[in-house]
Amino acid sequence: MQPSTVANTINLTASPSQFYSWHNYRCAYEVHQPIDITPEGIPLLLIHPIGVGLSRQFWQRFCREWYNTGERNSIYNPDLLGCGESDMPHVAYTPSDWAEQLQYFLQTVVQKPVIVVVQGALLPVAIALVQKESNLIARLVLSGPPTWALITNKSPEWQQKLLWNLLDSPLGSAFYRYARTPKFLHSFSTRQLFASDNPVDAEWLDTLLAGAENLASRHAVFSFLAGFWRQNYTSFIASIGQPTLAVVGETASSISQDNRKETPDERLAYYLSCLPQGRGIKINGRNVLPYESTAEFVVAIAPFINEVF
Image 1 (cartoon, rainbow, N blue to C red):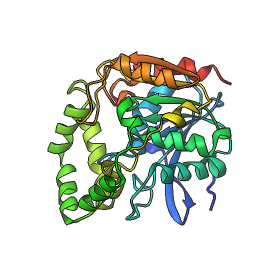
Image 2 (image 1 turned 45 degrees about the vertical axis):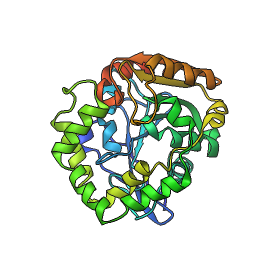
Image 3 (image 1 turned 60 degrees about the horizontal axis):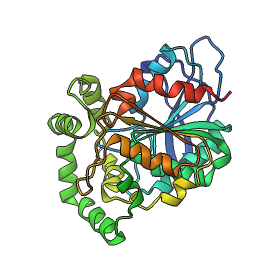
């Protein structure tokens, strides 16, 4: 099934969801375009992070700011399987699974090259997508990429399976019920994601609470926590031929506790030494820059995106 691709306006609260079928799963997405203006430039494909309550709604502030500054690119904003309004099968998701979903989305819905903007530790999904569908990816923007140690060290398969089995249990379900409470979400956001308490506002918490309401959303989160994305991606990163911009927060931190501290400058240096056509920039914020430092993030990536028409 290939849906029609009628574009939404940037009145994001009224943007209707659209759907397509992939492997008999119903997958949701939305398309944004500037109001009353013909879109220009290469479209953006946004890849949202995985976490309790996270979905394509993560990007709504970015989409508003993108058009408020006068940019005209169309924006494709899909829900990954297991998240948002997409189906939530009880499976262990891998980056390759989500990359195959996005590959199909590019081939059947978008049908033209895009600039991929990927948040945080979903970088392996973007890497896998480049491997699968390089011709439909013009450029990449890496927002808050993981520490170099996380992205270049494979966790043991036995450990991944053990963690998945522990989480995919009644105990894991109980943990998820607690993890989707306002108290936990606020605490985790301030401790791990944001540089200050200010962006951890009602909009952020309400979005997470709504996204985690369906208990089946835990499967994608548990897949992430189990570390199925933890591989050595060094050679794959080195093979990315597209121009790539890495954007790192001035106070960037790691989601992992087992690695030594890595400064933002060191993180940029690692990525730029490996990416054949890499560029890097630091901006205010910590780990969720498109939400925490939305205006500055848009200013940082717009020149890179507007180089190509």
